[in-house]
Amino acid sequence: MPTIVKASDTNCKRAAQMLREGYVVAFPTETVYGLGGDTFNTTALRRVYEMKSRPADNPLIAHVINAEEASTLTDHWDKRCQHLTEQFWPGPLTLIVSKATVVPDEATAGYPTIAIRSPAHAVARALLSRFGGPISAPSANRSGHVSPTSALHVADDFFETEDFLILDGGPCDLGIESTVVDMTAKIPRVLRPGNVSVDQLCEALGARVELATEHRQSISPGTSRSHYAPRTEVVLISTDDLPTTLTTAHSRCVVLAVSAIDITSPHDFIAMPKDGEAYAARLYDALRQADALQAERIIIERPKLRSGVWEAIGNRLARASAR
Ligand code: TXA
Ligand code: MG
Image 1 (cartoon, rainbow, N blue to C red):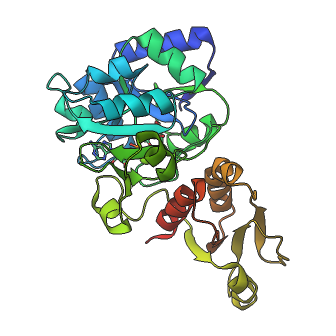
Image 2: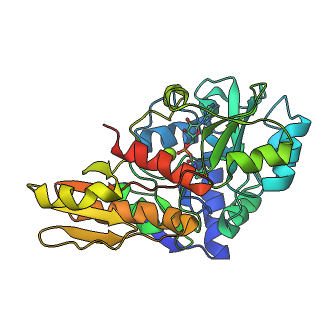
């Protein structure tokens, strides 16, 4: 069984020491929990892949304390990167830039590029500064499953893993993974939408930023169509079609909806917040809760909005429902 400990100063110190010894530890960030290993320790990096059963061709995000540390991991840190990091770091923005030769290939799955982000969460920052170097960390879930937004979610996915420390920093504020933007393209391209929106990036740069098409997103590493998915089948249904879908359903469903819908037995209902930020923060816990109800299907009311954080929510819902 993993060990969950409160993210006190002493325990951050203990986790940093474990990282130095090549162990993998789970820690909270403002987006989701990460499963971290020393970026420069190839044994630790292999452990991260093994634990998650992550495909070997899916690269990791290096977490850094600041832009100065980020610039040591790349051989091309231009004005645009500097500008974006001044505006959005620490925070939920990951930049993809060309990789410096000092970074081991295992940290980027052999890619010539590296994804870098400086998290805002106080525990992630305490761990980074105690450790004193970059920490490569994907989300702390089994590959393809819903990302964890609490220490218990991490423990659920790795309940059989021994010698595994989870720093408990409470529920994550944002609840969905960072915006990933490819800075190696002439026009920066968002591969994964998140809390930092495409419009905010355009405004900060005073230049065009593209949102990769669904097709492009699906051919990027780690952004295959089915991801962030509960075990139960998920379907997205418009508000108007919800009543008929439920009355004609032959088996038990769990409904996740913002609208107040009259749900009768045998179906279950999980109310979702109206506000986009609150919806995102609640989403993964709601999906795990719905999964635990062991219904035949999870039915999600398709959100109507598509701007700001709803863009990212729409992306995750599409992935959760893809088969
Ligand atoms: O919010 C987050 O980003 C969380 C927390 C822990 O920081 N991390 C996270 O990591 O979501 P992960 O590994 O679950 O997702 C990283 C995404 C994947 O889709 C991966 O394929 C992509 O970033 N990525 C990483 N390096 C890349 C690269 N060099 N080129 C293209 N995509 C890359
Ligand atoms: Mg992930």
